[in-house]
Image (cartoon, rainbow, N blue to C red; front, side, top):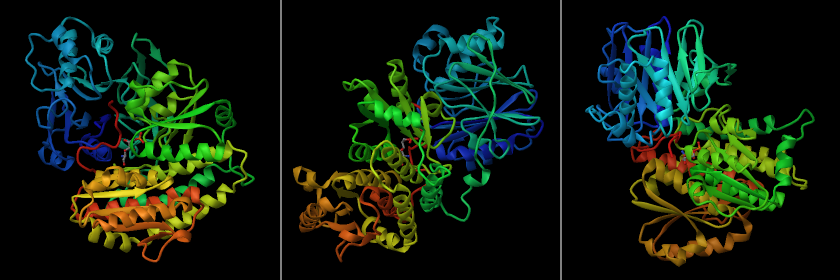
Amino acid sequence: MCGIVGYIGTEDVKETILKGLERLEYRGYDSAGIALFDGDQVRVFKDEGRIAHLRDIIDYDVKSTLGMGHTRWATHGKPNKINSHPHQSIEKRFTIVHNGIIENEEELKERYLKNIKLESETDTEVVAQILSKFTTEGEEVTLAIRHLMSEIEGSYALAIIDKYNKEKMYAAKNKSPLLIGKGDGFNMIGSDAMAMVSHTNEFYELDDGEYVEITKDKVEIFNIYGVKVNRDTYKAELDSEDIEKGTYPHYMLKEIDEQPFVIRRIIAEYQDENGELKLDQDIINKIKNSDRIYIIACGTSYHAGLVGKYYFESITGKPAEVHVSSEFVYNTPILSEKPLFIFISQSGETADSRAVLVKVKKLGYPTITLTNVKGSTLYRETDNQLLLYAGPEIAVASTKAYTAQIAVLSIIAVKASNKDIDLIKELSIAASVMEALCDSKDLYKDLAKEYLSETRNCFYIGRHLDYYVCMEAALKLKEISYIQTEGFAAGELKHGTIALIEEGTPVIAVITQEIINLNTRSNIKEVSARGANVITISRKSISAKSDQIVLGDVNEFLTPLAAAVPIQLLAYYAALDRGCDIDKPRNLAKSVTVE
Ligand code: M6R
């Protein structure tokens, strides 16, 4: 989703902002723009397309120590130059960038902007014009910002430059992510720490309904009533090297390869000084005291949640349900008497999940977040937090966060159970098996070329835990290669889907659970008889000679960790073969900050 980066200091801002925007590219965008305050006027350069294109259209003679940039993921109006941010008020006093959605845009236009012809189709321009209207009518700028905030319904992270004040930048936040980076002789704003980490690793978080006045030496945070808020900074454990690609051609490949290391880091982080697994006792109590666990997540995190449900039920003995956030929020099921909510989110910023959190918090239920991003919205707003320790995940397609989520879920399930499982040993074995799988890239490259480079569609089939793996495998393949792919419970095929199998249709079967081995193999026969080209991924001890991908033996319940590697690499090489933009697939955003 949209990305914001801003800077005020003594150095020329262009490179800082452009590099910051490049660091936000992973969030997904279709247009980019920059505002440079030359001390006299605010110069705006923007267009549809990549930041590389923005670099081509900037006037490098403009010198500026105050500026801001934006990557836009279109919501209101097409991706084009006019709709790109920054937007300016009619007399060009205010220049604004925005992430979020103003829900009462039409009402605001009707109330305040009847006589103003808007240039763009965006809700952001409405904000710029209203701010200008309030100040033209005599309101001092911070009063006008507060007035504006009280009128807006919806989500926003706003950065504002007022051409009458070259020493200051303003920002405001509600529901959309925004951080303030504290520097020495400069200050920054950004949608996340990655945009600023080359310059600072000290940040202020903002709460909803707060606005900030930022000069090169000072950051002052206020609530919507204009009362100053005292807030300490925090240090982000983020190294700028963590967010480089190094020698890898794509972040996705790097992140796939990092998985064994991430699992080992999780083992280390969740281990006490006696070498035993540790987990916050409060979390264990919450699980024990609940009568049902509700796992809330979207996309890949939802698929990890399905595996988590299995862990809670089979290991902990606690009933669990998994829900897609966007469904749960408006179609809430009848809840048990003592529900516990576990939110799973790589980014910790997913608006759909946050909407559920707001709802269940109002009902007073206990909440836990599993996230990769310390200090993210879900991290801050739930009662307890568990970190994934996967390091920054930049590729839009989630890989290492998914396996980290499964590993942490297994730790929670085991720690909340009475079962005597040597999970450290089992996870270590899984990490080694994953490492070996990462080392066989030629195999996946060849299979992807043979089976997936030309196909229009593809099916993943599996049963039991393998079905959940298939759902994730299908998402991975479709989102980066654009092959229409579905993940099916293998037993469901004959209830409809088998009608789609024709000569040459690729079907990828996953078989890691002994109990379903023979059943899924029967399903393979059924699709083969109808012309499907089958790839089988199996676990060594139940493999057949003809299986093309064999996973080393890991404990049965941890096979989703091992199976993740081939399904991710098949997707990667299929997308590579088809010439797709692997790290930034079309229409997608890494951090989905609007509902
Ligand atoms: O940050 P989150 O885990 O909450 O994101 C949820 C989904 O948007 C995300 O998992 C998405 O499905 C992946 N990018 C797919 O690879």
